[in-house]
Image 1: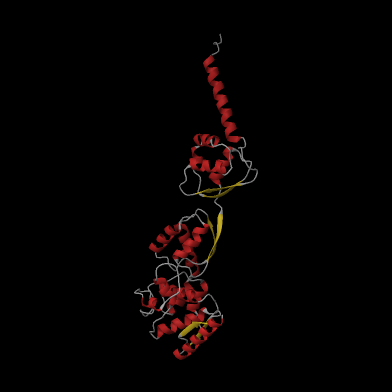
Image 2 (image 1 turned 90 degrees about the vertical axis):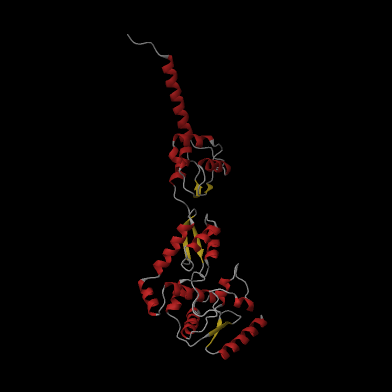
Amino acid sequence: MPSPPNPRRHALRAAILILAAAVAVIMFFPRLNTSPKPTRLLIHRGTPFTNIVKDLQKNGAVTSRWPLMAIGQFVPSLHNIKPGRYLIPPGLSNIGLLQYLHRHDQDEVRVTIPEGLDISTTASVISRHLDIDSTSFTVEATQRKLEGRLFPGTYNFPWASTPREVQDFLSRQFDSFFTDSLKSMAARKGLNENELLTLASIVEAETPLDSEKPLVASVYLNRLKKNMPLQADPTVQYALPGPRRKLYYKDLRVDSSYNTYLHRGLPPGPICSPGAKAILAVLNPATTSYLYFVATGTGGHYFASTLSGHNRNTIQYRTNRNRQ
């Protein structure tokens, strides 16, 4: 004889079916998007899931937060969303939206790092493009003694890269450039890696003209051979606190191991990150007897082998400058 129907069991089964239907609606129906166009979302490192959902509502990706919060309760793994910049396509379901954020690769940003930037200026360039604090980048790169090794170039980085990831990438670019062949060339000139980068950084800081770099390199190599002080203004600039500015005669007396007016030989390390052309100029300098150079005042430099020739060039520079 069949047992009588159990009202409680029927009610529970109905409640379960209703709940399952509600979950399906929440998860798989298209979300209510206020715009038919893709929406942008920035997720910084360490942003909690609840804040991400709030930002989705704020930028118009969804009109209500509760469906996403509910899905987060049912599928906790979707809380794991990588930091980055996202362009969210329209028409996704609620769960599709969270899955997109959970699985989607970060957008990459193209960043150009010019030749001749020191660590702090490099940090400023990077912080304008990536989710990186320039002060943190500067402190970490300085502690790691990466001055000169943040190899210039144009690269693609994930927007949410960490300072360490960017620093390691740029340092690897230098390592790739500085082949065994170039290391052998440096060794034959009596230069280790630090000395090569130091001299190349001075050459880089002295002239933006690639055609002049071998000439500038020859001047400093000739002065080193004669045990003359390098007297390189950029090394004094590096020794002074704050941004670069016009130098005064009093600055040439600043007490610093980087002051090549007071100390003979190379300074302790690079003053910026030189590019390939400056490094190659040191390894393949022009064959000259030049010991001096001064700006032309119209772009480029005058070179001289004697102090009297240098003095004449200096007069010509002042004449050119006064004409402008």
